[in-house]
Length: 387
Ligand SMILES: *Cc1c(COP(=O)(O)O)cnc(C)c1O
Image 1 (cartoon, protein in one colour):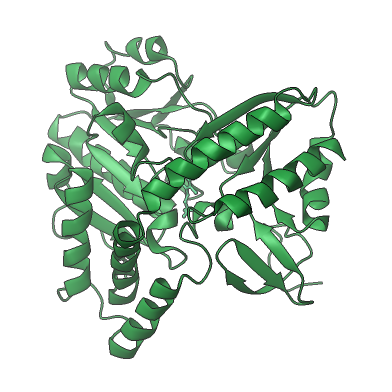
Image 2 (image 1 turned 180 degrees about the horizontal axis):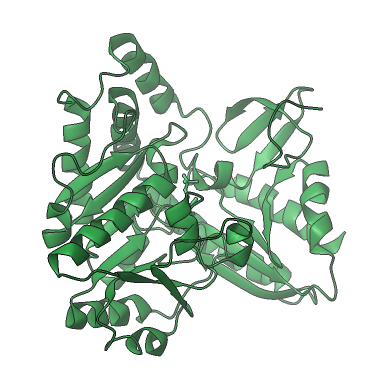
């Protein structure tokens, strides 16, 4: 019995404290959090520098509204633009809202081009959020079920298929392509290496905006600060959230060139967006990335985890694929051999937090994971799969 709406179906466990990769429940049991609150608590639970930053900022100032200049917001914008090679930022409270801003940018871009019925190409199996616009952009009928009429401006094409996008080159209504560099909710789907480069080239040729949703793949998750940096390219629009605040709600829509000029006074806004607290915390997150060489750890632990997974699991009949990019990891399972629906509870019974998406185990451990903790994680996964 609960007074909460039934849109979530939480596992029957309540956590009261956390530290690094570990969470403690109401009975004192410790769990390995191999999901980081779904890719949010990338620096681990209650990172001391983040905690300190929250304490200090909350003693100074929490909120003023965007009717006044916000020092930390301006500073965070400078830092993010420098890191991502972008020009301007709009701050939101979530990933969906960062994507909403990107979609509004694409609409205003269409106005400028005198396109009345703009269309954005997105990928099948993609996930962009739960608002009406972002669920319409999302390529999943499960997310969309019950919410029609959807926004009609999205056409869903196969992911990792350049030709599927090229086909629309003659369509005068297309204004943008919006993609996750690696599909997260779909189960860590990693495209061929030059996919993004080829899509960007098509966008350039046709004067379409190239929008990347790095809400999940960004903020160091893949071993670079942003996943698209593996491709040595710069998108027109880049959306961030999840790991940006390590647990405080902040999202960001970054844009470059003409895309960065679209949102002018009165066209968009958010009451909470980019308030002093969340921006201070995000600045501290960026500090920790530098001071603690987080990306080095991601890459070292990624190699180690990859080796260990392959060594221990590749020969298992249940395992049909192991997908690893940085610490964005999935283990594809053969459903004819194993019942995936039981795995979440089985893992919980062994004090392990993971995600099951489709027929894959998805693992997004904190980026501060140590080699010893990887060993614990691998042992638990082997046990889970062989149970
Ligand atoms: C989680 C996620 C979102 C939605 O973010 P919210 O903060 O839940 O609105 C959007 N895009 C991607 C790729 C995500 O992983």
